[in-house]
Amino acid sequence: MRRTLSVLFCLTLITAGDASGAVSTLEAATLDSAELTPMGAQRSGNAAGTIPPWTGGITGPIPGYEPGEHHPDPYPQDQALFTITAANMEQYADNLSAGQKALLERYPDSWRMNVYTSRRSAAYPDFVYAALRTNATTATRIPAGRGGVRDSIVSSPFPIPRDGEEVIWNHNLRWRGIHVTRAGAFAPITRRGNYTLVFLEEVWTSPYAMPGPHPLKTRFPNLLGAFKQKVLAPSFLAGAGRLAVESINYNDVNRMSWVYSPDLRRVLRTPFAGYDNPSPNTDGLRFNDEVDMYNGSPVLFNWKILGKKEMYIPYNAYQLHSNSLEVEDILQKSHINPDFARYELHRVWVVEGTVKVPDRNPNALRLENRGHLYSRRVFYIDEDTWQIAAADNYDRDGKLWRVSEGHMINFYEVPAASYTLEVFYDLKQQRYMATGLNNQRRASVFDEVINSRLFGPNALEYYVR
Image 1 (tube, rainbow, N blue to C red):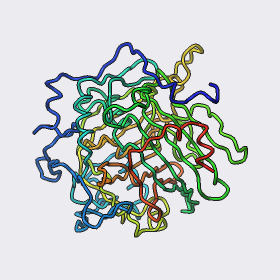
Image 2 (image 1 turned 180 degrees about the horizontal axis):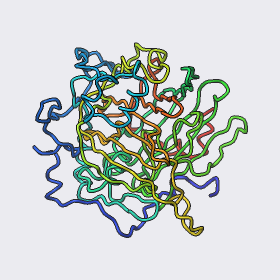
Image 3 (image 1 turned 135 degrees about the vertical axis):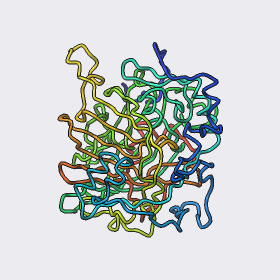
């Protein structure tokens, strides 16, 4: 590709072959009804009353919130109902993941799960709900090649999913805002509890997430969005930058990415950055496809819905989000500080991915026949948001290797549900990594300003410098 060629010009719509996904008009009518919420979740609570019905979530700022500030806890009066430890976890085993049990067993003297009243706080703008109703009858999945979705708008394409891969696409294409600027940090923690914070600024922009017609959407109907990042500290990493442009249909154009090297003072096109390639500067504690808990083409795995279950998952993590905390208050040896983590009982979709056997045929397309260092993954996906709340990842010998959790809040001024902290535990190394950590930095800014010129490779150098 010539340097002068626009990145976005490549993202044109492909004509697909066999596809699956859309449901009947009659089925779609169950969305936003007494049966289902607009997101496709079960509207009612559970029989025990420990999961409440969904009544709309938090749809606007609460008293005490000022624009641009960190979000005050909307439930400050809540106290932990009980605490799950290694000693009593069998009592709650049916509502725990294998990974959660493994963490309790591995760190019996320090790790615990404080369980609070369940609050179905998730909410989204009305145009997101309208898009989901449209998607239910129009969106189709393209199973061939690297995979993709077509005829989907704004948010999750399959609010009434038929198979596991459709649930994965719901996570990947869920609505997270149109243009988001955030400051944050991440830290790979050693076995002794030492770490060096890496401070970042990140920008996510998504024409796909915009309601209604827009010139960018018309010109590039296959464009999901672009992600831009620069490293601010420590000094030996400062000045580096990254840019990734993501499509909705990987058969058309696969993910494209660039880096800015402060040593070379040049923007360089990178080889494919995804799947089980290690994320930069993470000590190998997170793969590229674990950013945002999971991202990218689901083609390397066979996905299966194992069902829905009630499970204790991280939720309404406003304590971890608070600017009254320092990073040092959160990061401890072996795991985050359990005093600030909040778990609630929610219904989740349980989706299992088993890695496909690599095709060693030299004529086979490389990316979708390369295998993966994880042989099996189990995702626990919140029914109210389509976000992965927890993940269990198994090595090639079938042993549980890594456990990850996404601690979410409702950014209620938008509103939008998203992570404030993601944590990745490596059970073999007895280490972990945390990312988010913007407690003493400015809060995320959501707006609708998209300037496509700022998301080409030529603009990356100016952004970083």
